[in-house]
Image (cartoon, rainbow, N blue to C red; front, side, top):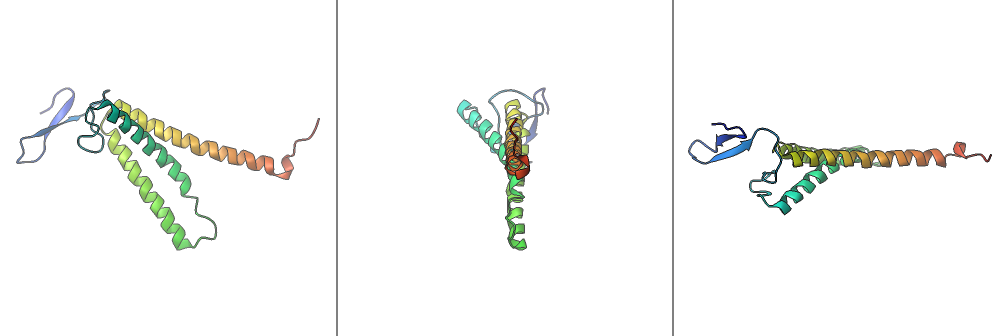
Length: 146
């Protein structure tokens, strides 16, 4: 049975309990993120959930940089294990963000987008500063006096 804001689904064939699932975006602190009963209509826990999703989004983007962080000269099998481990953790975080966004809460959605944006910004600013540092440290780029 469905109403305007969600869809009621039986928990199991023998259970008479039902769960109300939101099927469209909504704004509010009454949300379930990842685990049943969390953040449980508590404003402080909702803010914590927002920061948690933001952190996960930023961590996903920052972990893309770790894929290339294996030092030259590392044994290939060890390098492959390190990269596979980083990839597994990154995918775990990505699925957790996806499941959080599937709560259809606008605040969680914005936190996920902001986290990905912040992580991407941090990576790009580091890459650009490193590139600029390399340009000015080369002997060809010594500024001449006018």
